[in-house]
Image (cartoon, rainbow over all chains, first blue to last red; front, side, top):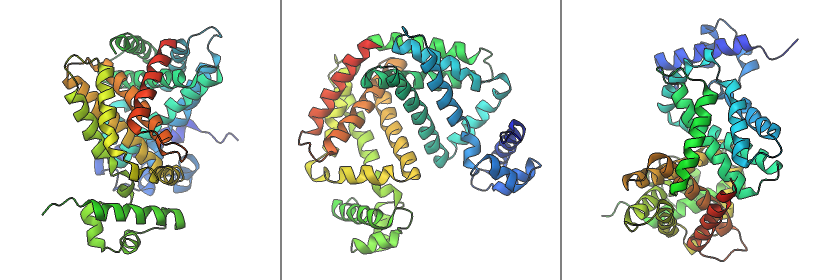
Length: 189
Length: 189
């Protein structure tokens, strides 16, 4: 049997978001989330270690996608071209069905200090994953760090655009455009 | 009466660090920290909201110093020159008597996930303070974000060097040199 079942994870995320919105993050328990999702507490814990991680399950996926994207970039790619490959690979995590969660996730996280801290850690982890993957390609440490920071900024900004209700562009397109604009803004340093 | 008394704050920091090292962060209580510092619990809470914030009291100071440094930079300064001014102003927080806490703080934070998250948030807050101060000078948003990220990287790396036992250089010098090297590394993007 496959241990990874997308359906329960999705149901738990939907239930958690609803409850966090209705009654606040602090007042919501794992049992309430499981019940709302029509699942048991033990099913919850098969998928997430605690209620907070329901909101940050994308971290591991994004670290893996971006690192793999960089590793798979053409040998002749510049560091920033490898970061473009990372952002294109990351788009797999930003599929159409998830777009509507975007503004809701952003609002729930913004409203709670613990979640904002966790979110800062998530962004740092993704940036670190990109920097490490760049160094594995032989990119010098500082150049890798800067390229990864630009990639992180592009991802953050593209996500906010992608998740905004009026936007219908693809994440990959938004991220690539954002990275290009950041690159050109860096000329004014 | 001045509400800010450096002496008790310093004693509480020293006591907290000792206890976190001896018995772990999770097992240490506010009462234990206050007792070890020869102070009362209510004195503790006059200085810090909880045991965790003892380790991150520098955040507000660093946000203020860097933002003020940028605001006070010469009118003709480029964004990166303004960031140099921010790092020089930040050096006020890295005085000689604090250097020995450096490796101990780094080790305690590295050993606890909650503290690592808080630390990521601190770095994000300082970077955001610099970006905001740059925008107030009229620097375009994306350029301000990149300059602030470079400043944050330089501060992080200079701090690690400054706090390493073998190092006797001044923080300001290390940070300025690091920023210059990051700038030159950015040419290879």
